[in-house]
Image (cartoon, rainbow, N blue to C red; front, side, top):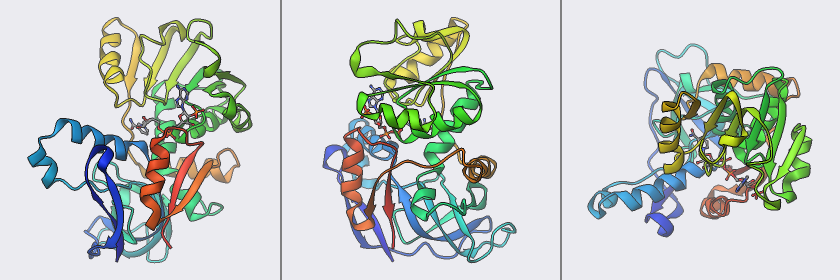
Amino acid sequence: MKGIITSGWGSGTRLTLAEVPAPGAPGPDDVLVRVHAASVNPKDWKINYHIAMLATPLLVKRLRPLFGDDLAGTVLAVGRDVTDFAVGDEVYGMDMRLRTASLAEQTRISQKRIASKPPSLTFAEAAAMPLAAQTALQGLRRGGARAGSRVLIIGASGGVGSFAVQIARAMNCHVTGVCSGRNSALVRELGADEVIDYTRGDYRSSAGPFDLVFDVTSFESPRSCSALIADGGWFISTGGDARAMLGTPLYRLTGRKATSIVVESWRDDLETLAKMVAQGQLKPVIDSEYELADADAAYRHNRAGRSRGKVVIRIP
Ligand SMILES: NC(=O)c1ccc[n+]([C@@H]2O[C@H](COP(=O)([O-])OP(=O)(O)OC[C@H]3O[C@@H](n4cnc5c(N)ncnc54)[C@H](OP(=O)(O)O)[C@@H]3O)[C@@H](O)[C@H]2O)c1
């Protein structure tokens, strides 16, 4: 079957279309999926960069990272213990921990990590959702978002942010989105009550306070945002970045609420998101679509840091 193989590390990473071994029959708890679309997440290239920096050249030579977690596709076969899915079902999901390896015509994935694809979405739109929309949902919940909460979303125009604005809106929060001026109209259309253009000066001492500051750029820390956070409010980060990882536990020592989240794919959450799509509360924003053969260009585009919504890869 056709799939993407990676070579090189750090800035030398290349993604190339190749003939790769098919995944074979699904395990007892897995389904085999014909992947129709996947999507790009910054974590793939970031992890690749971090390994390149931290691992010894010997280890780096032995590792072969598989890019691609999100998928939308059709079930080709089911394992012995799978009862909720059948051949021909259209599904979407991802498995970040085990790596979905979705940049390929077929892959295997646990039945726990997928749900029925929202019927109104194309495969490309559905593939845009699992990682980013679940991050948004899980981050908002972790930060206690509820009706009336004043929520600040930093990075409101990106993959995670564009979902977070819509989900916070659906929760009846009062939503403020931070983005650059070119994306202000988009963020308003997604449902933000207020928009802050971060290119017009440092808003971190003048805006707020907010019950939840949700930083989905991973650039901020509880300290850099402390003036934005209301008494008893939360700082939630998607950061794998050192400042966020070190900053949030230290901040917690002072008795305040801060954490970095790591997204997990759960059928319940995917079903909640699918329901929101069906109710017209959620719609993926697609920055661009690439063919599988152009996966390298898709990742280079995302690495530039300016994606509006999600970059999607079609696997015809
Ligand atoms: N921990 C987890 O489980 C988890 C899960 C998902 C994502 N993440 C992390 O979360 C981050 C965001 O992911 P993503 O998929 O949303 O990335 P993305 O789509 O690539 O984000 C790009 C967006 O970031 C905006 N942006 C860049 N600099 C900004 C700034 N200083 N202030 C506000 N917005 C800014 C850009 O808007 P402009 O062009 O307008 O600047 C662009 O729309 C990444 O670091 C990713 O690794 C972590």
